[in-house]
Length: 251
Image (cartoon, rainbow, N blue to C red):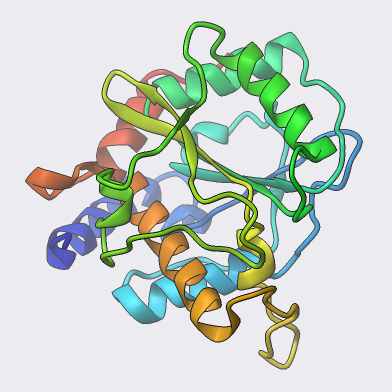
């Protein structure tokens, strides 16, 4: 497992760096990508719920609060992890937005895409695959093998999960030995979402509470992987990628 003391030290270093810029970035924060068409915020509480689980299970401090940002947002580089969700077809991103996202991922950022449609070959899935093809035309989306660090970055996991088991695997884009984008077809957000009273918003299809807990653990693992430069060496990723993104501010 990741050395939590090192990860916490990394977050503290991150706090020092952002203190001169904006206090809102002092803890782990995950914004959601806003796009045209479709439904870019199907589960408004999903990310807050996941961040709560991360804070409770790993002792990492988080900033919670519903926030959507466009890829054109000037301070996109401040976030090491971004989330994109949906269940419907969406409009194609502009060439400039595709370039900005490509640069963001190439300089150290991470994107989790979550299909909330709970269907095979959904309209959202078709739009996502078209977007990824434009994003990295020379790098195909590939199945993530079970020996990938994502499955052991915090919890030891032997299968994927979500609100509904649509696909038995995750897919990803690998750039220079680092997975920069993960795509899940299993509606992770639906398994994470809670209502205002803290109750689970949506029922799990198939596997009950165990399936939900696996979805939460998978979410924690994906975030921990994204914040870790090299799992085997226990190196903290967060301050390093933020410095890299800072040096290479997006146009």
